[in-house]
Image (tube, rainbow, N blue to C red; front, side, top):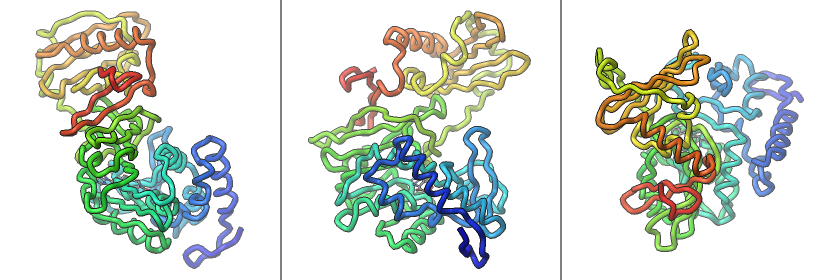
Length: 392
Ligand SMILES: C[S@@+](CC[C@H](N)C(=O)[O-])C[C@H]1O[C@@H](n2cnc3c(N)ncnc32)[C@H](O)[C@@H]1O
């Protein structure tokens, strides 16, 4: 297909790529029939900047794609199922090379539509989105809720909010874009039938529960400080409005809400020189994989897990307490069935991990889908297994 892009005439093949993406998303089940009209009407490319950084999930690398230099590549990425970074380092980064850490993006279309399916949005709904980003998701929502509904979307970054607002205006989609901290929600337009966060949280604000209608749905990518793994919590607001509860529905990976990013622990503050000599020692038969991941983070609270890179067949896995300076390390050696453990401080973090793993095995090794979360007044969060009454 031939069409002009920014004054140049190029063969974009856009229709075929978009069609292939549509088919793939329908085939995978993420793009549901009720979202097809929005997919067709609200094009992702209308929300992407000229210079963008598609992100390769396998290598963890991003590459620069400049629409004015390579319109083919730009269009191909815009029509592909890949996440695209649109801002680095909270906007401090200059130039076209990738920056240090991404701070805004257009999420993978497959993830966007599977979350929208989870959200179960209908015509006439009032929706609050936290994390405007490019504005594409807000545009899809605005199309879906129609003139009888409304969409408010907020972003903590002023430049990102302005660009999203402008893209929505150009596309003729009615969504109100605000530059503010999404943790506060936006009470002025409450109650909302649906609240969706498109950044990851560690603590869900009770303000969102207060601003949602009874029976309303709150969909949040959520994780602990144990590690980077996350899953979406799909919470339904209780009829009395005093809590919201629901299961984890899918494993996801989002950039964190700004104030809730993982902070790298200062190793030396936990393990001063010669601390290893004074620590308790033992051996474990657990493997490094046994103590990593989302579910372990649900079971071992207030701790962070850091796995060193393997070097010469040796790999250390560290645990650091978040409320004190407790620490533990297990050193795994290739071919060895047991790993040596050192631990010190008020907590015995390795013993906690062993106990958590034992409990998890006895429960039949539940995956994240058997767990759920309840937020109650004051913002306290309870994690449960199978039923909201079975709080961990
Ligand atoms: C993955 S992007 C959102 C993608 C977006 N929904 C789209 O359709 O392109 C995450 C966004 O969350 C925003 N964010 C981070 N912390 C926030 C906060 N406290 N309140 C509101 N937005 C926040 C970031 O600035 C970023 O733009």
